[in-house]
Amino acid sequence: MAQRGEGSKVSRAKPKASRNGKATRGAARAVDPLPKFVPPCLATLYSDVARGDEWIHEIKFDGYRLQARIDGDDVRLLTRTGLDWTGRFASVAKALRALKLNSAILDGEVVVEDDAGASSFVALVNALKAGHSADMVYYAFDALYLEGVDVTAAPLSDRRELLETMLGRVPGRGTVRFSQHLEGDAGKIFEEACKLGLEGIISKRRDMPYRSGRRDEWRKTKCIHTDEFVIGGYVPHSAIAKAIGSLALGYFDSGKFVYAGRVGTGFNQATAGELWKMLQPLRQPAPAFATKLDALQRRGVTWVEPKLVAQIEYRAWSSDNILRHAAFKALREDKPATKVGRPKAVS
Image (tube, rainbow, N blue to C red; front, side):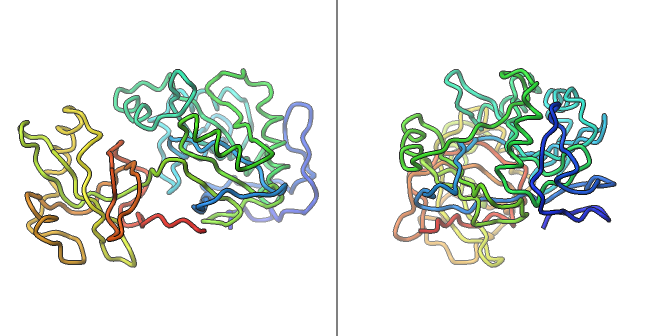
């Protein structure tokens, strides 16, 4: 459950918004102090879309999930594990500070969009490397606290109404934006998202409160399989010195490191060199995988401690549980390697 300050028990009254977008006392009693961090609500992967009028749908962003904690002039941007990444997203923090809120905790995602308006994780990582935050956009899709009021117990539809009202005075194409949702035929919405080359959709129950942890009331359905895997080794590039040619990947299952195959595409010469440098301090004589690998899986691999997490795009899993047609996208730093498990869709 979300953290709350002492004396902040939430009433079940429907929250309201004043004309300036600030939450009224109808939602809860004042919270003091504002929680340092609220563990996020996480979506469960489903193989089919959620259908029914009780669901709303949002485009699945390809960026970094960040919680915006606003306490006067003190603005913090926190990863899904609570790491403070405010310094990495200076322009976003500045734009949030300009909202002139006394206090708030918002849930959203930072992205960099291409010319067609689609978010690109690779573009975001490149912007972070270059120290360019001007092109970053923070899409807010939920409100947990607004102006000293805990609204986590209110239905999603009410929380989003409060958030949209509060952001209504913000320029439509500014750094901070309200993440619009879609209603109607979920199948058609998902089909259109896939046609546009988007990663997928997130479906949420409009009548549910905000609850931390992985929940069934938030569901994700993917057009493109993109997930995190842990690097367990690398094969040096055959033609370029001090560069990787491919990576051996895995994931954790009940504490055991499980082999998931190799990825040999998706990185250019610069990225291949950067990965080689980052992996040198992690080299070890034997593989960390729990099961014995065959000769082909072991061939040419330099083994490393399984600490770096990579974002991988892939077509499918083979019958022997190996990734098919995998491509490297970028490293991720917002999730510990030991928390990376095999993604399994609920039918």
